[in-house]
Length: 403
Image: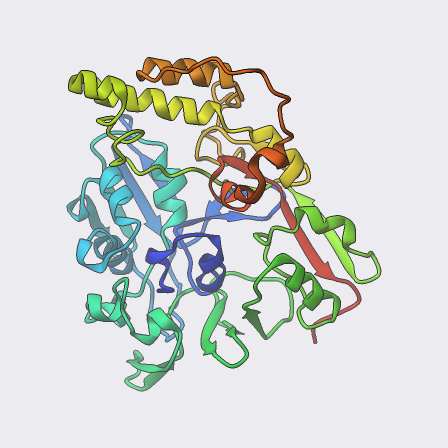
């Protein structure tokens, strides 16, 4: 599924991102300032529980319908409706409590009522949820725009019509958004997603590009070859080219690095009997009332046993910093004094495992293997889950201009 509420990572967000807007968005790779988008401002009550968000007026959906508070309410209601299968359902319910706490308080105003203040209101709810068009999707159910829905808005394949305000039909080739680019469908032969410029976009944007495509290319080496051969003009920052940077010749490629506001992290199965519930740990089996305590010890041990610096230096070619919490360093809520890097300490990890009831026998000391020797084929999987904040590497082909 390619509607925003089903996003599982940065790759699919590159596809739907140009089409949609959020209430607030990060602006610019360099300063990463959170700026108003579909919202213009917000106020927060003294206790942090009531957030009044004023919406931007004059914004038009790609099919000509005006954007208003009904779209925002519809979006949050749909995401928190479990039958649609959105991966954002659980975190939004945790933060907001439920759809009943999202209230339309004006044509261009929405009020959020929270049980408790949380920094995730600004750093997740306002800045991460892409708004959907009520008028276009209100009659579509889970079979159409749910997680497994086959509607063109969700698949980018085929077309559908929406009545415009003047009564004529608007033919859509994918999702309808308010963003700077209009979806023009997926080409299965060329394996690319196509876009045309939205000339009615609510904000002035630089550049003179009228259309572009996102091509699906698998692998860092392949994408560098495509760039070198002139088949593409730039590629996504999530390609793992860190170790390939030295192979990029200045005659055909320009490398730009900047701090990233992305991070990689571990998501543990909290139903796992050892590090989730703890019922299968020695301590948990001995005293079931302490199973959850034992699981916490195991999770702490796992964190201490991750060699973040070694991964950054030997696998990411020094492009990264150790992560601590799931927030970018650029967040106004991020406190480097409190969020200190987690040390790599096998001695402490062993101590925590022993607190969970595990015992270790003393073995003959052997020469410690290097990181690459020790982790071998597991490196690829490790990179996907280690909590590190990486540097963004942008590569663009030199000597080409768009006309």
